[in-house]
Image (cartoon, rainbow, N blue to C red; front, side, top):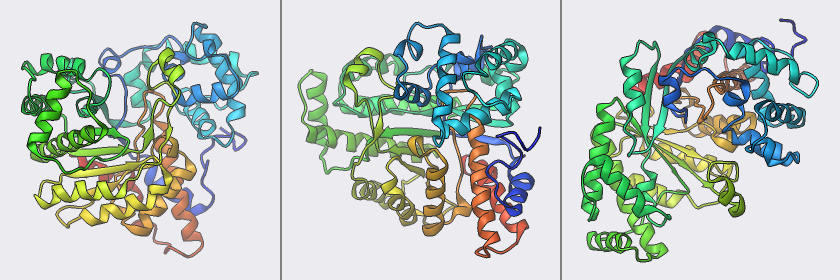
Length: 467
């Protein structure tokens, strides 16, 4: 491998201090990926992918958005075109993604998984498609081995309360030498105004083996599933909400709202917010009881294109950053839990960069000295999962909190080829610190700053989640 390669040993590392921090302290640390959307069935079955489209392009709405912007027909994105034609369409798109993180991710992933350092474009596409296909069709490139290739120690997938966790159970009984866990995601039980809410509760009844006729029945069913997930090794939950809900309510009001919904009557926006406030507080207290970590991914404006939502469904690339008000309700919610001493470990993620400093200062209100980094400002997420977004998150946390206590990076991905994003984050972190050492803003104390790098890369998450 020569320095002529775009992806080389010192990619993104701009001076000798950054290079030493990365190569000595960051690069060899295992990966704890505590939030992603990998399909556990594929891990349990150790799936072998027939070609790179199946593992790299299918399901990746980041790539889909870029291809649509270039004017590529949907048939070559999510449609009936062959896997090879879809790959060729992506290869055509890649040169146009310069300055988008997709350009960096694409070439890091080709290098780390396939030892391919050629730039992907229309000219190189045929060769790269064939080379990756030959490799993927071997046991060495099964999904479990793809995780091993990049030193993954733990992955934590995300499941709905109605999931029976059969694939996690199968993995737990196997001799797989990496940890696979799950996170509890009960948003469908919270968002009472959503279409299909009652149908969902019917499915929850089956999973919890109980009837859900009252609000208390719903709480009991969710507690039942929390216990089930806990018994299967779950240690954290995740919520993907536009904002935290916190409205004043009475028990009578919540019971009445729930009955209206179960009777298929229309509930108002105010009633929905009251209900969502009640059930979110109930869940958060349950998480504290079980000693779980709670995660809140806040600020996405989802399913903006109604026409394409009807055609393709959700999570297909039609979401964007929302401009919801976050601070007041979030403060009230955390304070309500803290006042009862029922605030569990918490990670807050924002999608709107305007909320960076809001989140960085909010966590300090509830870090009470009971344990290191109890309330965390989470890493750059989704649209902020790129060099500029990560740097701004790191700077906000550094300026207003203790970056040394940060639990670091996660992929939030559906792809087994996404784990070089941890390397990407670590290189950005090391370059940020190395630049400040060079400028004299930090001391040239490699032992201490190197320890901080290893803590952020791995040790803090290991201690925090206690898998």
